[in-house]
Structure formats: C-alpha cells, structure tokens
Length: 163
Image 1 (cartoon, rainbow, N blue to C red):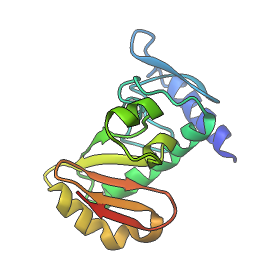
Image 2 (spheres, rainbow, N blue to C red):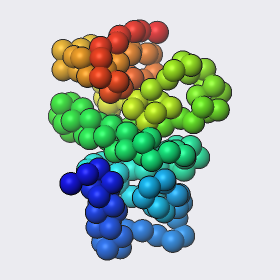
Image 3 (cartoon, one colour):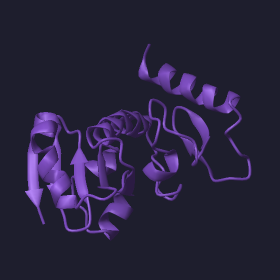
Image 4 (spheres, rainbow, N blue to C red):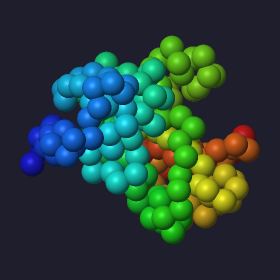
C-alpha cells in the first residue's frame, strides 16, 4: 500500500468513526483533503494535525510535506514509547518558510519539510531527553538540546547541536 492510500484509508476511518466535527478547526491538506485539526495523524495514536500545524495556522502547500508529517508522527510515537509512554507536548512541528523566518529558524530547517519536531516529555528536562536519546536516535537525523525543548528530525543522517 502506498503512503497516499494509507493516509486516505486512515482518514476515511477517522471520518467513519464520527470524529470529524464540522464546527471545529478544519484545514485542507494537499493530496488528502479536509481534516479536522483534532484528528489524529494516520499511523499515530497520540499526535494530531493541530499539533503538526500549530492549530491550523501553518498549512503545508505540498503533498510531500504532508507525507513527511505522517512519517514523523510515527517516529514521535516511537519516541513516546521510548520514554515509557509519558505524554509529549509539541512546541513546533511544521513551519512554512515565513513562520520559520519569524522564529529565527535555520535557513534549511527540517521543520519546513515536516520532518522536524520540537517537543517536551512530561516530567523530564529537555536536555536530559536529548542525552537519553543520543544512542537511540543514532543516525536517524538531527538531535538538538535546548533549555525549553528537545528537537529531533528525520533527515536520514546524524546531526547534533546544543543551544
């Protein structure tokens, strides 16, 4: 099954389950159509389209970015499980180029492709999260330690930093 069919199937299941609320924050995502920001991202039990799009204020304009968000949600489920299924709060996920510029993001930020997430694990200092993830994350991508959050991305090669 290709990723488009997987996403469409997941969204159809969500719609059939009756979790789409016409009065809530609906957004249009290229390649899959209208979804509610409260809907879980297909393949994810815990992360929503609202978390990935900053409550629908940062909407991807390309289907490739939507696919990256879905893939990254699966990585985030793995991270959540790695930390004993502690709740994770999202600080920043997808950023359009303008939003990325406004927050002082890197020119080639993985956030702009939907492959990066800044997050907090409940009850664990962000730098401790990054330290514990060092071996686990390996060469999957970037891992950054900040005072207020931990950053990971799935760029496919090792990158590390601390601020």
